[in-house]
Image (tube, helix red, strand yellow):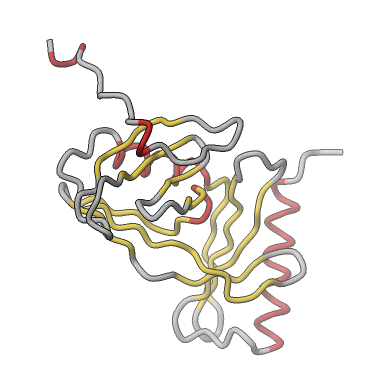
Length: 178
């Protein structure tokens, strides 16, 4: 009968300030958060609320890994804004010990994966670039970004030009027919 038991409702004291169309889909106590008081990791339809009260949109998470006890999140950080896309790099990894994870790891994996509408990797003469189009809650169209492989000369004019061409080709491939 355990499948009929419901996860306790998120206590009001742990509920983040949700946007009007935002709803909680899963939550887990985060006992190792700082400061050491009642904090939670809260997954919503818009993103993941961290124990410090900040929300990462699903499109802002590069990687998520679940060890069975620890959820590790690698957020995206903007390195540069270019004309039709953003150059992203990995931010510092955030780790959360979840002794009662509930559906949080599954929701994070599913929602980060579903935010990706397009991805392709392109080798360059030195390094490579991944072009990504992601869905952003509340926004029409896709948000376009690139992540360069380590060692890629990202400021080289030929690399910038080729990257722009790759992003444009991806955008055209996904554009609705006129």
